Image 1 (cartoon, rainbow, N blue to C red):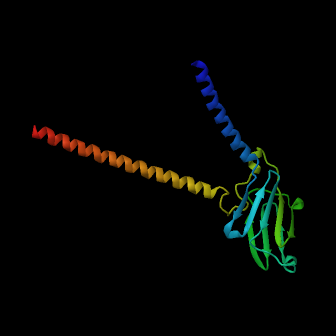
Image 2: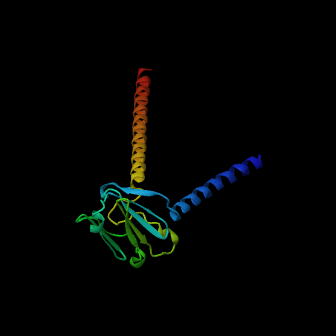
Image 3: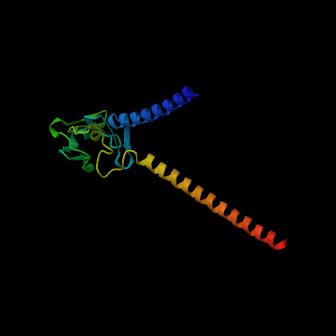
Length: 179
């Protein structure tokens, strides 16, 4: 019996550690690509670099010369076809002298070299520009909606239980009065 209990406890401890390790791994190595719908661009990152693809703003062969990209340590401005498609403070500092941009297959790609920060988790940016939504905003909103739905169900169940108890109490009073 003790061995079965020990195995169960060890399994529970391992699962907590594994979950914590997975979260830590996700904070350090973000392999996702995040699409900013209203901005017409997507971005992905490593601990050292931020790569932004302006997929919603395709450039023809002659239009690539008109692209204007200004990279400063805390700000990025991208003007395509005379229109600013990105003009925002960056989530963290970058090295402008080591950052580049290029047009490939009609898509502008900006590569920003991040300034390393300690602890390493700070190099995993939650968003590219400070004004854009958090990269996990959709997931967060879905969790909030599920939580609110659970709370509403619980409140409804509590209300129904109170109503049943009230009815039982009234029936009990009537029964006692009839006796």
